[in-house]
Length: 347
Image (cartoon, rainbow, N blue to C red; front, side):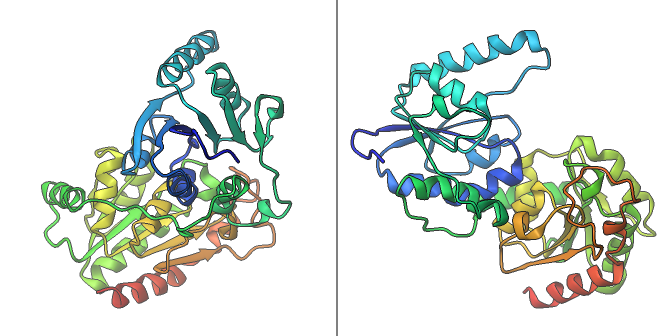
């Protein structure tokens, strides 16, 4: 792979928070491998905050597909125009879509690197061969495969988010504002998952865990989620005997990152916030249903994973015709055992 003369690199980021976290070791490797080069990221609005936390990122270009198909060509042209202004020497495509390669090609970037997925091979100048085993490995290895194919070394094997003391304190201030009295005895509950209901442990089970945390550990419980997950969070709250603090839909992603750093334990599904907690090294217990923790599970040492014990899991479906038996097979007592153990281990 060409190293000389590369002063500006555009990385096409991935589309989901969890994937953006899992791709961080590969992104760091580009930074380490091209010392002195200015790295910019092309991404959508909901992953913007993840990239903004990386101190070596010199610029971010936002790109979101418009709802109207008729507006799509105009959005592509707008993004291409912005990229052309910045005169990139190389584009590295973490995203698999044809569109990612098309934008890099139309932008006149001379070196375009990525997997030849989605029939986009002719638009790439440097195709990275996919190892046949890559799809059976953890998804972070998929992105590492790109940079290894570029001849770069991976220094950080596990995704890490390094946040400032100010951001952690910001999370603390938000918690205080909403009534948290003791930030050192906090359990977070994240009952949502953007993927679909086949990733979501039943709300009433989360309610039981939250009540047990209050009664047995003297913890304060914070429920978190996006605006789309208000109904899910409300069901958890209504199913409890005690009163939690619900921040669902009331905070930005950056706020939530600061809040998660203040938690003693997080209980969640396989979701973007699970990956955030893992990258912050916040202790967590995650429940898996239709997906496979070997491929998308948390990688930090303080993580615990419980997966449904049924033959059809993982099926990778978003919805289930069998009543979500994999999720329901994960018992409250098993999740509680892991929560309690982490609670007493963590200082």
